[in-house]
Length: 311
Image (cartoon, rainbow, N blue to C red; front, side, top):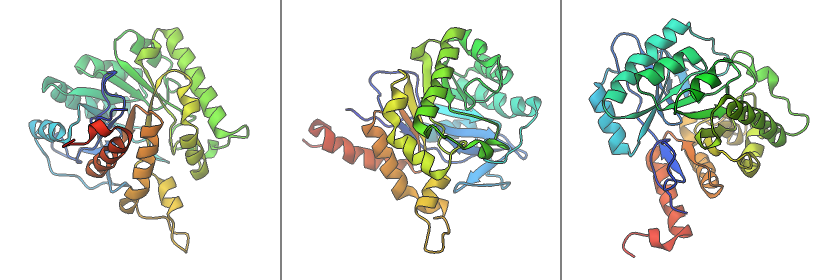
């Protein structure tokens, strides 16, 4: 299996597995920040610092420099969003979300970057598509806004549908799976696939995300990673976002039960990345692109001797 290193991209049979990391940067002045996401950066009023949410801004960096960093990192898509989905987060007003994402998408698209918009709102998705976005990344899978699927269907955009049960302020209360997390997530994603196809979004334009950490307890995330084949049986490509998430910290907790800090979870995360590669996952979210690339290069050399430089 050939492994490539890039951001989430428009479907390409020659790129079965893709990864990206971009440095956190602002794209405009004032008090606007961004946060790391699976396919690059999200423009928002908050950001992550080693996975922790906080209000500190980053220095303003011109858009062309962002693009240069993206190209250097091997990325070909930026995921831009204006709403936090961290546990307990409250939603911004629609006008706020539009103001955060549309100018950024316009700038990046004009610079030739393929852009994904991270939103649960059809109004924002439509504005983003008009501004040049090529992918709609909807963590609600169309459940948060009933007009999302028709909006995407009317375009030629790729649609990422994540497993989702409720908004961030309620999702922790819904992490119960009496019939098993893998079959339940598979069935609930199957409903989203059926709804998307019925709305006019063909299967080849769909990407499914099992939603690690969203209405999931730590053990649920490991079960889902072990059960990726069942999710893949739905026929769509898969995206997995595990980097720095709390279930890794819980696994690596110290003797007192204190979770491992977010900036010390990368070794465990790389094991997950390689597991995803072996499972044929289409895209993963990473923070440390260099480590992920090194691990994938070694994995590719073991899987395919022709990938080894120098013969």
